[in-house]
Picture 1 (cartoon, rainbow, N blue to C red):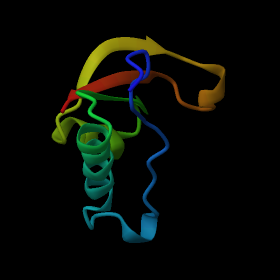
Picture 2: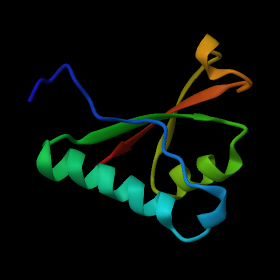
Picture 3: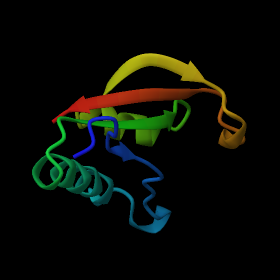
Amino acid sequence: KDSHLQPYLSNLCVDQNVRGRQIGKAMCRLVECIARDAWSYEKVYLHVDLENVAALNLYVKEGYEDVGCRWNPFWAGQAAEIGYFVKNL
């Protein structure tokens, strides 16, 4: 394991037609399980558009904590503000 690398949850998407079925929660937990059990990491990081209330609520309910970092990267398109979050596994 390279101590300079950390697991980063990116681009988690659930089709609108199947939202509300706990699929996003299951995918988060699977990523966390792999990071912790297979790769022996203690944290998972992610970024989220703070205006995406559904995603933000999912991550907060799953125990991700806002680290207070904000930025407006060029690749974020219409996202006004991106938040950086971490979860201790």
